[in-house]
Image 1 (cartoon, helix red, strand yellow):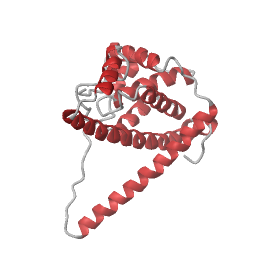
Image 2 (cartoon, one colour):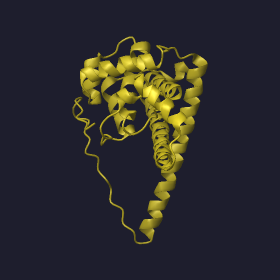
Image 3 (cartoon, helix red, strand yellow):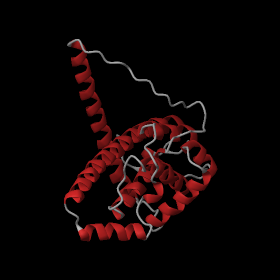
Length: 237
């Protein structure tokens, strides 16, 4: 984002639509990189545990699970078919949340992840974390916001599940919902870098595809089955 202040990120209608597009791009890339990194580490840890069990680390992880802490409450049975970027776009399209809400929601996810490192953000929980953090951020920042039932419909979960996840995230954050201006600005700068990195990665990938096509390779354009025609989202969790 060209600006890193609360006032510049949060604007009206057209200005905010442009700001949100930049914010969503940065958040999507940041979360996708986080998930990919965490799942690589998780796979490596699982392989290592098969060879040699580390009692101290295993005991610490078990203790956290016994306390019901960590991100277990957000874990689905399988990764949804919709990507993080498209999911963020869907939430923005139907909830109308300001760009500031998405930034603050990302702050909440980052805080929860750092406070509970034994329970990483992965493909099985990232969508629900995004939904829940945005719900809380909208209640903190926006004068007018949709209720939990509407967020649940848009996000593809039951109202009961969203109520439970909201309470869980509040406790994971120790109800620390205040995001100061300096912290907000630092996250805006971070997301700006993520946006630039996402575009650089995209350009590199496109160059590879063009090169392959020039050499006789064929590339089929994929089509998303996800539709924005209805606020109700059916997601196979």
